[in-house]
Image 1 (cartoon, rainbow, N blue to C red):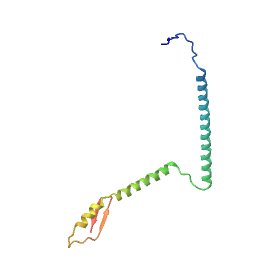
Image 2: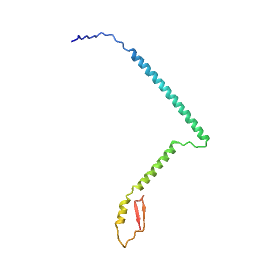
Image 3: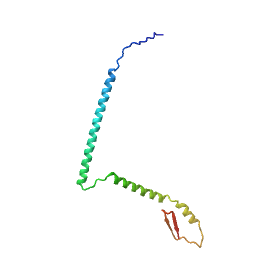
Image 4: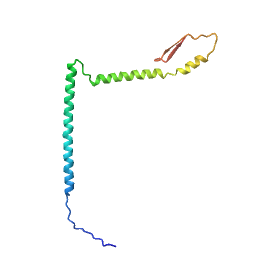
Length: 122
């Protein structure tokens, strides 16, 4: 078995050179990334401003997000209404009408009122 040597008085460097170099490199990359991001944000702002100028020059009105949101909400309401109309349980009603075979009764027509959930049968 080898001898175990304990060194309690070892002098160590509190800031190793490799750690400091890595920290400086990381800070430099962070600063370059922030500068690049700010440049891109400025370019986007310029392009949006020029686009709105071109739209106004062409006679088109720039739509705001509020009117677009209202249009989407109306489309969703219309889609929900169509879905509600399509999912009405018509099959049970049609089967009940077809199964009633009374020679004295004649089926002339049917007028559904989906909002009131009423069906007028003539």
